[in-house]
Image (cartoon, rainbow, N blue to C red; front, top):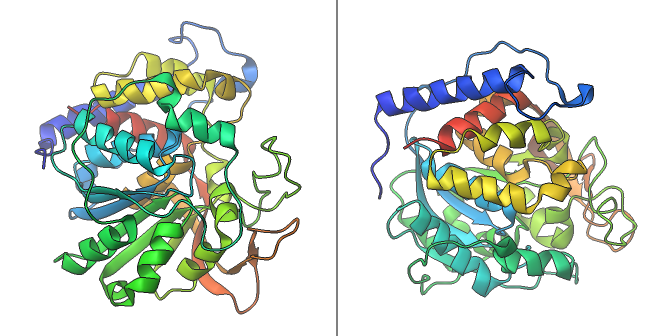
Length: 365
């Protein structure tokens, strides 16, 4: 594993974040004038340093390797309180298995993180035939036209096997950050139920509880105003995970609505990228600049990763939820249902503090 930064380095990173926040909070340092609606109001707050978070967190990342997922992986690889034990690719998500594994290994190489095992699972959902639009998947498979270093070899295990073996063999309870369809996690919990007691928490990016979903609003021709994409693709898997005995925190669209990717942030990021990881995350945003300008991007997976390391970034409510598996206009809806699985849901987030934290971690040496 790559050595984690010393406290003095962390403090420098936090100072950088405060500097970034000064840019975020004042329109004058930004070269391009912003419309009044994008000009942030000054906000005073204290950024919790990583040393305040506590002990080392042992994490498995299960992700579908889209832009926000790659950001989240880099954030967790850089975080001084996180040891990434394995990365699994959700083949039912936006990347197909072969390119997804290649890109994950490339991120590990970019971070000089050593030999973190990487694997993929199945490419079809446990039930049904939902899928991300093929054009989206092609862009992700093509890495948005960007390049990563050549990584090592994939694990000989498939994703559910790697998840199960990593959890089973760990001397510490494992945190799972699941930021794609939940196919791999559901497979692991179903085939290896003994791992449940060694999971500390599963942080899931998925669902929409008190707000509209994003499936019907993404120009994919699907009549569904309730579902969020990760849950929609494999509702059966989501129900299996939510109804397991594992502690779960759902980072839903209710919270990610508070962390849009704005031109204000993009312009600030342009002058606050001092590491290869930060530079690549900036390039990912540049490759999706049209989506930023249209207001179509949020920090979905990034917020999930950040909450896994600092829960003070969000507020939570507990709901009884059931995922709608039947086809129709509510398919994939994380629906409040009496008697459903009791799930802790992040319903709001501190957007400016998230932005500063995200920048500070990515820019740590």
